Length: 140
Image (cartoon, rainbow, N blue to C red; front, side, top):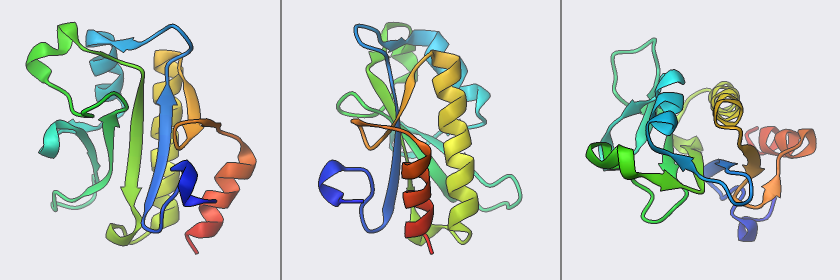
C-alpha cells in the first residue's frame, strides 16, 4: 500500500468508519456505539482500547473523530457530530500485530454496523478482502 493515500504508513495502520453521503454520526448515539466496543475515553480526548489481560494502561489501538481537530468533548456530546471515525494502531507499540489488527478491524466493523457507516482503508478507499490481506502482509 502506498503511504500517499493515508492507508498505511511505516508504523501506523488506519481504518476509517465513514458516514454515508449527506449523513453524520452524532451525539449520544455515537457515544453509545463507541462505548459498546469496550473503548475508553482517555488521553488526547480520544478513545482507546486497552488490553483486558494486563494491568498496564497502554492502548492497543485508538479512535479519533475524522472531523478536525479529531478529539471529543464529552461535556458537549449532545451537540457533537462528525463525518467519520478513524481507528489507528502503532505497530511498534504492540506485540501481536495481527491479533491487535484483527481486534481493531472487528471494532471498526461493529461501529460501521451500529452507526450504519462504511469501512474505508485510510479515508477514501472502500474496504475489501484484498486490502485486509495487504494490511496483514505488511505486518510480517
